[in-house]
Figure 1: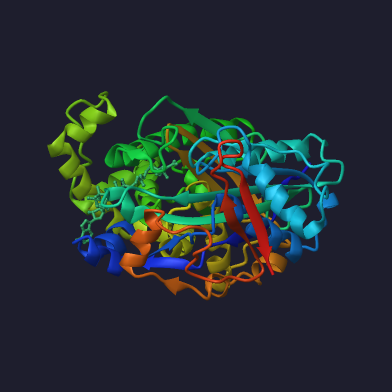
Figure 2: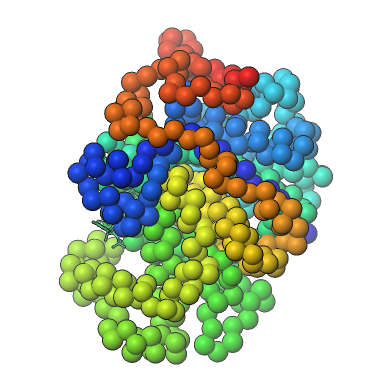
Length: 464
Ligand code: HMG
């Protein structure tokens, strides 16, 4: 049975900070953000928004757009790493908000949980719900998987350049108009790591930035190896001599903590995949530089990062490689469109990969390309750490959905924050009753209870 993504909707907060203003305030070269990381703007939540509001706003949008009633929805999963309760799932809050519009008890029949594994948990939720449909358990109902996060780092930290916020919701069913997942090829890798984590009670994560970059690439490569074995053994793909698995993917969507991480990961994966192929020998000749090898090729991530000579040479090699026409061709045709939204919005943690997918669809369609039957490969990564690689085929009815996508229009009207306003919001100096914007027809947070007996209870309204 086919199963996959029928439609996708996004909710992005209307406030943002501009990368150039941010760089100026932090004494950084704006080029580091814009060119080095690929960050132009970062979406910031208002005082009356939390990840549950973002998720509920995205869900309402997809339901209204598709004229869905709560009866049509059998499962609602929320994936987040910005959770504010150790026990109560974010689903309850989202259902509570939606029932303000659809009526109390309207979603009573609907199951679902909050899933957590840093940025990768949305991919696990998609996989589980796809299998719920494939197993014939859905009984004509559809699933909503919503990924919602606020990427917030300490003021003055290097992670502060890679913030953002927003939610993406995907409607899954057995006649998906956008993408049907390839069966029996989903591959995972997992390892106990401390590249990025957020201990209980801490609002911002503890991050080992360069370590996390390298770990992301290693874990995705490991999952890709498993994907490759499955794709070949299941007969999904057949490699002719000199081919790689990546040649059989028309698009690659990567987890995007910042847009250039997608490019970095693509270069890493291609190097790994092409290394054994005749085309690599030719490329190395044309580049005039041998691929560097660390002093201890079997060493740890720390030993590789600590090998300064290797790191400098590898950086030089990567720069040279990413300028070759061979890399540029793959980059432009398979990845570049997925990065556009990320540059304008920033990191959405769980939602970043799927914002990238949406961006890929919209901007490839705008090029006039027929997307029917194109294979999309996904490289999902979550710190701590786990990666997931999977793929799907764009479906014949995709145009019905994609022709109406307009990121610019959906983001508007946005308001640019001054650095002073941003810092006030960042340090939580204002209450939900003191928002920067007065939005209409959206779910907003009105109160978080501080009394001993009901501490943490949240109240939301639909702002008519
Ligand atoms: P940094 O270490 O300060 O930056 O912070 P850098 O020195 O690596 O520079 C970044 C890029 O800008 C480099 O490009 C520089 O060369 C370039 P590259 O060489 O890598 O291509 N650059 C410039 N370019 C033009 N003009 C200039 C200039 N200066 C430098 N003047 C870091 C970067 C990402 C480490 C930091 O922002 C950070 O810690 N971010 C948070 C962690 C993160 O995003 N990690 C990504 C991988 S882990 C992950 O994705 C999981 C995550 O989403 C969490 C989850 O799973 O839940 C984070």
